Image 1 (cartoon, protein in one colour):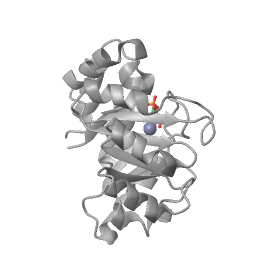
Image 2 (spheres, protein in one colour):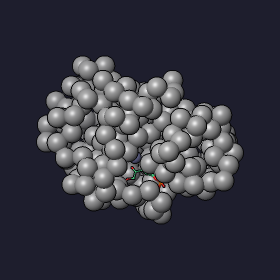
Image 3 (cartoon, helix red, strand yellow):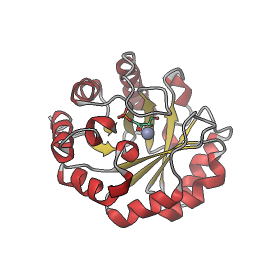
Image 4 (spheres, protein in one colour):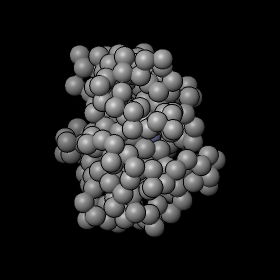
Length: 219
Ligand code: DX5
Ligand code: ZN
């Protein structure tokens, strides 16, 4: 059974609580928050204040994807705001083992994120310490992009790496360009967590769109 994490980046921010209700009705498992700083990625989104507001709107786990420079500085703020999971990019963090330990000490689950051009094997020596491995299936920074096809091979590679690591509880998460068709292919390749923004919040019926993706990852 796959886990579905709608990304609120594509939601209507004037009506966030209601938009979250609609994905909950559709069977969403987590809420994914994309934090962007205009430096690590070209776009700027939102910070802990919005995560705090989302915390009041839902009981679902909040998955915070930090696309920011120097994420170490902000871990506490996001966890205090209500984040259950913190995901950091390995391309940005110099002392990754230390950062992962810090996230756990602060009481959250810890994830490592890799960009599309970062080899999957780069996480070999951190895999036993993380709860989540997020494989970007688009270049981070914007919603509404197309799924990069070699992501399927990368998911399969991550599944193999997990088997050899002894960390069988590790969840393999994917993010970017996820719709019914790419979710189905990625689920078959072995992905566990599916982040979807525009295919859910861009739909006329948000609950129905959530349900449709949920269905293809529940077989
Ligand atoms: C991309 C973000 C994604 C994004 C996904 O930088 O990390 O979470 O919101 O959006 P879609 O589903 O529209 O590709
Ligand atoms: Zn994301």
